[in-house]
Image (cartoon, rainbow, N blue to C red; front, side, top):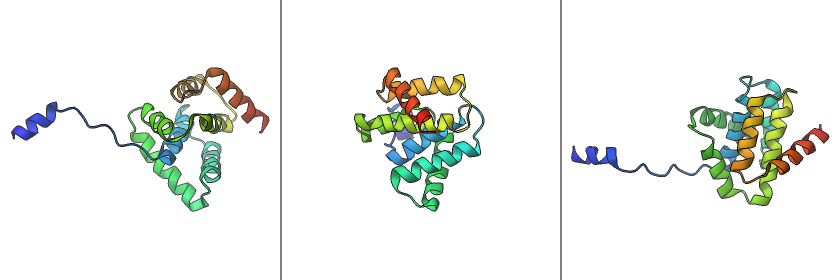
Length: 144
């Protein structure tokens, strides 16, 4: 009983580090869900991004996305995703993550303030400047 009482006051353990695949896939799902419309176009874009980035089969891609959807829904905050990405993805490769996020934002042809706000936060948390994020967005737009 005393152990239970002490456990109530003990500092919580550091959350377990996420695999970078789940962290990136989770962010892609989170940005797609931000506007309240998780569209087929966004899901298709997420699948293409994950398949290309990790060399996955269609089945593996769907499995990873579905796992990320479940995890994203239960994740209390966005920092957990970005912290894992910062720990596992070198800084010079994080712009590719920002580009992937912009691809999802732009997949349905509609940008809104919620997506823009989250993109600014994500870029900041990943150590990417607003200017570099804007350049990433322009690269995505020019490739569409």
